Image (cartoon, helix red, strand yellow):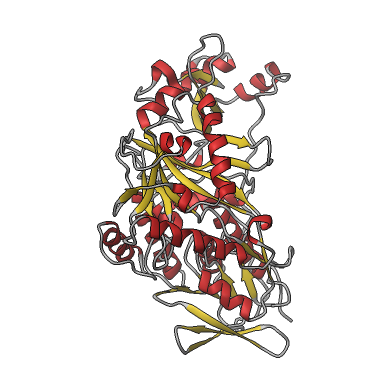
Length: 531
């Protein structure tokens, strides 16, 4: 059902009108899905598109279904109940499962295992979310970088210090369970029905803590500052133990690796132990910032700023006509900030972050360019090494103090640099330096961005404003390699007992898909009986 966004009628009244019923015949209305349709048809207003679950008075449902039997937009609601969690036939004498990493994949793998009575042990290299928040804020204010407690590592994973977006391209029944778990842990109910739900980093900090406490309540354990540095395999190649820190040995026959896309030392360790891995394409680029008011007006026109409309976002794509290489906006953060997201010494990495209210007044998004083996070679970790190289160049260009290199769109397209006539004050902290971004980006990337910016300006006039600031570099959009696994068992190829999962393993791209992948890995383990 579509209605003008500024209607004053209640959903019950709207549903009754749509069904041709008196208002008293509608007993309850539940929002299943809500989206903004800002497309203009012959001057039509911006509309909200709803999918509603309507409960009617006795005797009314049959009449409505008969009256609207040819209406494709109306059908009898299906009662969907989540499948009960099956306790497996494994013996309780088996070794306690270990979950490595407490990002979305690790968190939901551990929660699933705990609900099934398996009392998992979680090992997270970073710190709890409160300690982590203090460490990150200290770094952003000019303090030292904590290599084990930063935007990439710690309770909740990288998603905790992002926009908290729950949008995903996957369509899986487990998504409902993930959303329900977030709501139970304190997320707003609206995430269950909004077309583009988000939680915000301010709310996520409390939510991930509540999920951790639920895992512990169910018998699980969570250790912070516990980095897995090695693993032991038995004579048949099966996982036998994990090494934590320098020498602690944890006997372990089953481990779920949700290590995140920035655990480069862990990638190197796994490769050295013969775990099957492969390089994969990814994308890198810059962050661009605009006034949020500009984006709102571009998307909503004269209705921009209306209290019933959410702050506007955008999604842009471009394909270079010569090279065929693609560029696109990514992780668009309305009302957010550009943040320092490095996890290694002498590197600069950017990411986007926003709170639930999205009220900073600044819109930012990554502008990414596709990167493939033709750019970095066929070696498993060569893409990762390209990331490292460009992050170090950005560090050098920014002044070797974790300030980020920035350049206006006008300078970037005009072949000049140094202008500080910024359309908005750069939000990146601890600071920025106006330079030439060509110094930290390869030519194939700068040429593609130079073609993409005018194209994006055609889609959103003013997008390539000469004063719009671009901040380098966005290099951690996804994992540069994949840990190969069996499609059915989800165990690593030739390494029984090891379950690679989530974004770091190369099988997800965001909070929701990573959480679902973690659940699937746990369910795969639970479904296999042990003789």
